[in-house]
Length: 256
Image 1 (cartoon, rainbow, N blue to C red):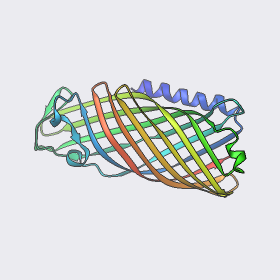
Image 2: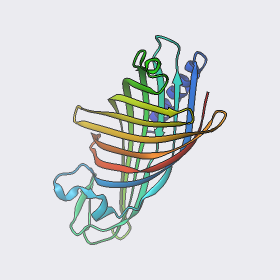
Image 3: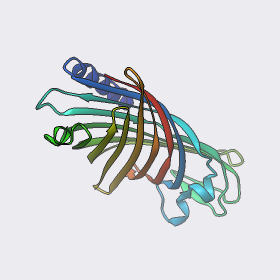
Image 4: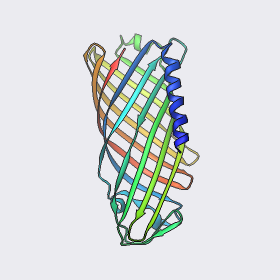
C-alpha cells in the first residue's frame, strides 16, 4: 500500500510540474473540512451481522481534516487540470451486541473493541470550459466539463483487547467519474462555485457535490467557504465500505 501511495504521489507531482511550465493560470487552496461520517464497513462479510454501522457500532465522532486543491488552466486546445486531495480518518471504541466476523477472525459480541477507518480520496481531472460562454456572459458565467479519476484509498482496523484479536486490511480503488463545474462571478471579488463528480461502474459508486463561495481579499489571495458531500460505495480486496462524508469547509488560496 505504501508503494501504491508513493506511485500516485509521484504521478501527481509530475503532472503538476510538467503542466505548470505551460500553464496560463493557476489556482491553489488549502483548508479544513469538518467531516461527519455515516454508513457501514466490513471485511470479508458473510452475513448482515458482519457489517459495522458507523452510528450504532463504531461510535465515531466528527473530525476536521486538511484538504487541498490545485487548478491549472492550460493554453488553448489543451485540457485544464484539476487536482484535489481530501484525507479522512476516524477512530473510536465501539460495541456490537452480536458476534461478528472481520477478516479471518470472529470478534465477540458485547465486548468493547477499538476501530480505525481511513478513507483518503485523491482526484485528477482533465476538463474544458464551454467555448465562448465566459465571453458571451462578460466573464460572469463559466461551465467546465471533463473526466475525473478518483483514487479511493481505504484502510480498516479492528482490535479487541479482551480477546487479543486484531485485523487490518486496506484497498485502493481508482474510479472514473464525470466532472462538471460551474462558476458564477457577479462581482470582480465574489464568485459562487459548484462542482459535481460521479459515476457507478463495476460495482463501485462515487458521487461528490461541492458548493463554494469565494472572496478575493487582495492581490492573488482569496478565502472561501462551502459545503461538501461525498458518497463512497466501493468493494475491493474484500473491503466493503458504503459511507457518506459531509460537512462545511473553509480554505485560503492564491489565484494567478
